[in-house]
Image (tube, rainbow, N blue to C red; front, side, top):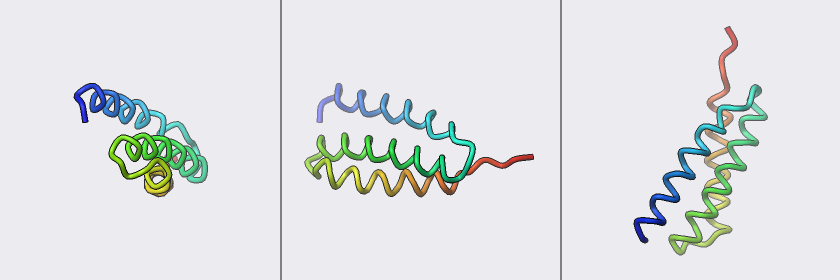
Length: 75
């Protein structure tokens, strides 16, 4: 993997992390986290040789779980 590829993946990860916090409800955060995770997983899977489909499944499941578990508190 080249340095340029690693830098592009790091930028993608940082940008998508900011987008996960946009949801107001647990369901919307799970959906957005799943979509962002699937996109990132597909990109990483295709670069690492794992396969885009497998990476998307793993990333989507992880992103949906993280989005659902990090629902904001309402004070």
